[in-house]
Image (cartoon, rainbow, N blue to C red; front, side, top):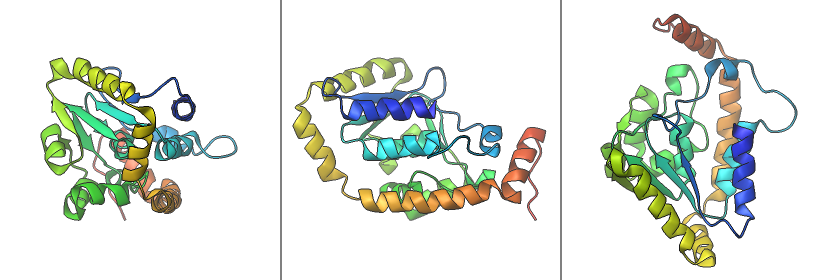
Length: 222
């Protein structure tokens, strides 16, 4: 999945015929987070893992990226929105980054980007307690651009994506480049996060988090 999305974003970035790309969920969730057992199995193959390729693709994409958050956005569902230029949420959408609950750390430069958007105190409340933000909270904090009623969400977001696609493409690219000026710092943050994240994947804390979740019991850390 991550490889397919990375390839799609990279192809979009160089295809002049496509002028807007929108992420949305198929079903009740935007994303339910990564499969912990898949994470626990470690990277497969050579080169950058597909998830890292995807994160770099959305970070480096020169054209508009839109997130249409139709339901709960958990983990990467929240962090990928930080790299999108427009973020629309359904009324029932929620946002959570339960990394610490899993014995892990923030990803995708979210440790830099989320405090920059919603403030350090609010970001720590999200990261350290693992709590979910409602769509209205996310709107007030500046995490999302607009909120739409569930029944209107698909039509409204598609219309907005079409508006973006119909806009002057060079002006759109330049506007994105003018607004997003910290690519080097974001890349450095992603690298540091990735190293710590990888180390935590091999830690007793992550192992206990997975075991506790599978057994549906509280985790006990030593």
